[in-house]
Image 1 (tube, rainbow, N blue to C red):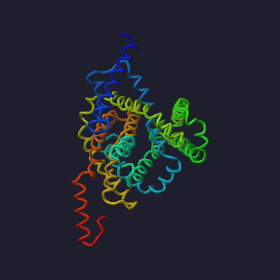
Image 2 (image 1 turned 135 degrees about the vertical axis):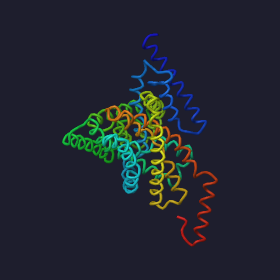
Image 3 (image 1 turned 180 degrees about the vertical axis):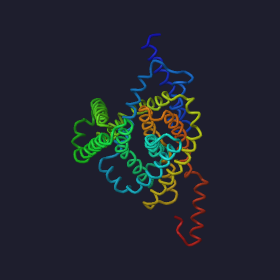
Image 4 (image 1 turned 90 degrees about the vertical axis):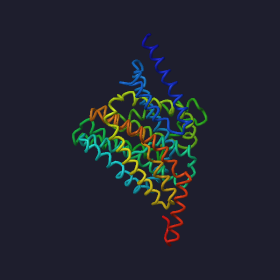
Length: 399
């Protein structure tokens, strides 16, 4: 069989398998991400049926997948909403970072991986999966809930923080000296602030470049601009994902709404490839020694994420059920965690970081959707009522 023929067979077979796995996940009521990661493990190095001809295709597709995940997330927010959310939730964002990044950094140091790996693992455990959380909010019918703006504010702050965290991590990974590292960071921050300024002041002008009611030109134009800016962002040591996120923020109105609709099928395709490729590049045998550390890290950081979400909701006056819904829905980690681990492993920092991150993400994306459903259960609601009744009988607030 020729190389090109084998490429078509491998890609076609794997995409068909992913489609069936996505259908299974939808029927069971869980995220498809863990199934995609497992598929990658099965077909990757050391897997049951390793692929030989299509690795390069999936590597390129995975890069596009990250870009599409983040541009569509950016399309859900306007620049004004982003700035307003940051203003309302600054304290919540700081608490979220402290409670969830510090355990990852401490864990890496305890394993003896060194300070650079500690910075990377801090990012892995810090950021919730925007894609998984957004899907959960839709699936659970909570988009109109009072706590949902708080959930989205936390996600926005985390995603924007990545615009500053990733350049710092990149400078550390390439072993840049102090002056070179500071220069790269200043250039990266300036690039981010420039894009944010253009989005705030001239977002409508940028949107006028595209015809909202002409699907073909809108799809090609927005996709082309996104990939162009993502590439330029990487050139100045800003993550391509962050560049794409800021492009999404810059677009507004009907252009943003229509572009989101047009790009969503492409996002689903390439996002699946992204998660599969991460599994493809991880040897399942390497995960065995890190399963116990990954499970311990998952338990600790899911608990701290619940606490940070609970406190964020409490600060805005949310009732007890809303606080628990906020904390529990944020527990899943996903795309950014894997992006960060991929960057670190690609730079040769710590080989075990990739299998640890894969196992960790698998555990959190499986547990996250299950935990998010707890506040909707009859037992939880009855427990909250009993606590409220007891608090009122004692003459104090149930909160």
